Length: 89
Image (tube, rainbow, N blue to C red; front, side):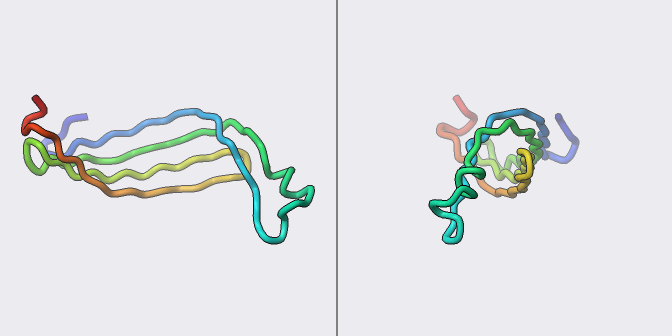
């Protein structure tokens, strides 16, 4: 999308396959550990913004949510990119 505020937002959805590996001090080498090991389909949502600070410098922030069976998590990240040469050419 384009905005009048020099910010470039984005959003997306997706599906994927997740490899799950359950482990811990209390369940190692038990049937519970084997039950938690699985390959499961998942659903993802993502959204973020990019802020161009200069022709070759961008600041980015992103949030992502994933649902896979009983496993649900959210992650948030902030980063930047520097493109050489300036202007991307």
